[in-house]
Length: 155
Image (cartoon, rainbow, N blue to C red; front, side, top):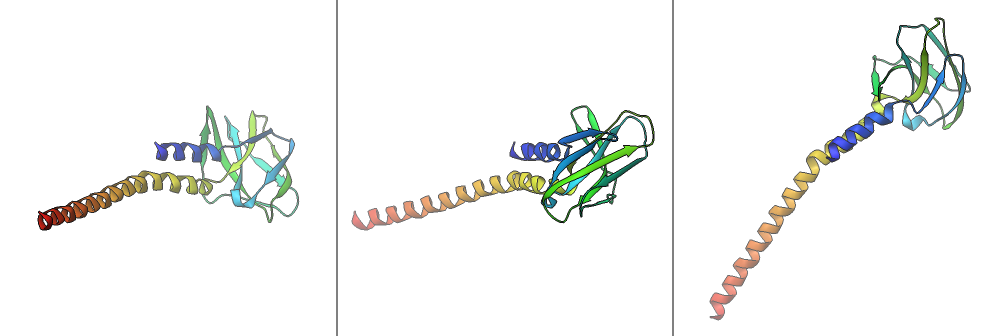
């Protein structure tokens, strides 16, 4: 159950939390530790261009990644490399006349911690329970053996 919860929370944390339309400028709080990314949702293929303020840089991701949140499919189009935690101005535009939404979420790599926690819960908690049961059994057997020996000597 903990594994499933960790997995769902990890995937949901990737989906964009702040969305905006083409040509709209938004202020987004960026924390480099969260591995921020820009996502696009569109029914058709579009050509896009994005700009970000300050010292932050936009880069294409190494692989194509998509995240589904509800009924919306988001495709990661850019990663945000920011030097420090701050608010940045982000603008994305498209050349085509299409129904396009942009969003800022987290990279797939950012979900690794949630997945690692879920995996740890899946394997380590049962292993810890088994170890505790073995130790308790050994302690009970040793104490019973000692009690029997004391009764045999005293009787």
